[in-house]
Structures are given as C-alpha cells and as structure tokens.
Image 1 (cartoon, rainbow, N blue to C red):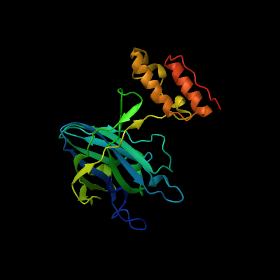
Image 2: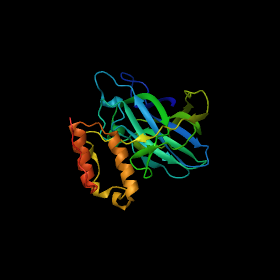
Image 3: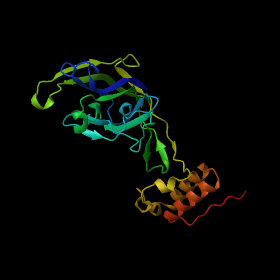
Image 4: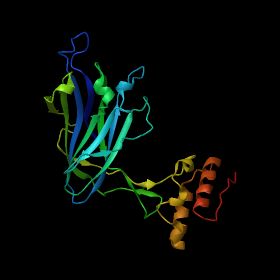
Length: 270
C-alpha cells in the first residue's frame, strides 16, 4: 500500500548567486513511525520509488547517497537498502525489518553525510519520490520450495510519516548551534490506522542462471537427505511441476539436483 511522498536534501537554502554567508545548508530526511498493532511479530518491507532526471544525475538517486536506520526502543540500527548493485537508472529501492507484537519503530531514510559532502560549499543532493509498505510472503522450510503469506488476514498498523531537517551553518566546525524543522506528511490513505494485505505465497520458481547466483549449495538451510521418502517425493513432484522444460531451465535443475545428491536427471523429450 502507498504511504506518502518523501524528499531528501543536502543543499543551500538559496542557490548561487546568493551569498554563502546567508545561504545555510539544509539536511533533510524522511522519518516513518510505524506501530504493529497485532499480537505477533511481522516482517515489513518499505519500497522507495524515485524520480529520475534526464540525463542521469548522481545527485538525484539514492545510490551511495542514503542510509536507512531503525530505532525501536534504543539506539539506531542500520538496515540494508537494496539492490546493493543499484545504478543511476534504478528507480526502486527496498529495505526490510521485523517488528515485534505491539511494538513501535522509527524507520529513517537519511542522506549519507560523508565528510566530502559536508565539505562541499554548494552541495546539490536532492532526491524525491514516494513510499510503499508491504507484508511480503516469506520462505519457510515446511512446505519446502514455497513462499507463504505471513497472515491469513490484513495486518493493522499505525503510520505517521514526517520530514525532519537541520540547518547547518557554513562554518560548521566552529559552532554547535543548529536550527531544526519537522512537519508531517499526508498519508495516501488519509488515515493513521491502516491495514496491510499480506502478499500471497507461491512456489519458488527456478529461472535460467539462478544457480550461479545461489550461495554455496553445500550450505543450504535444510538437509534434503534427512527428509522421509514421502517428503522427498512430494518436494520433487512440486518442483518439477513448476518447470518450463527449456534447455536452460533443465540444465539448472539438473545441477541443483546433483548438488542435493538426488540421482535424477531431466531431459527435453521434444
């Protein structure tokens, strides 16, 4: 579901030719307070969609320009912003986190304030877009090779998005007196109380080239050989029923079967 817009800034409040003495820099970030109103923990994902300029501009993307933090009831903890191999053409960035029963967290998307950025006399970081929140299906060992929904009904949350900014003096090394501002953002739903529909589960499909992107197959999170013959047969039947029998898929499946020590090989009969 859509949450709100967002905007990150690190730039002067008045661009040149305004004198730098009166054009302080603003550092602005996005804060989302979220309360899990349910009596069990859930994993949430936030998707940040950005607007791309034409031509591409490294100061208009989240790539290397943003960090994500979460704070439940203590110190800020870093979250991962994916994809980690994003480029200046990437338009969607995501982060995931778990929130316990009846817990409230502050999730923060902030500019990455490197020493080089702080030293710039005329910084020009400006990234805007919108935010979605979802309840992704998750991988579970039983049944294997499937993603399952986290709930069989919508999950209730309280949402409160806001922008917070700090005005930095140009001579930042000689002062500790900063001005700040914060203001709420309109929620897309118009309500603080929201219900998130869980994403449906489904099979984990095996696509061409997936084997090369998997971790070491000898370190899989389950031991296929420890399962009963009935469980093994059910898993194999389910996986094979998902396969598009082209040569690339069959080659990948055969390699996976080999790494799992399953004495089966598949061929295209056509």
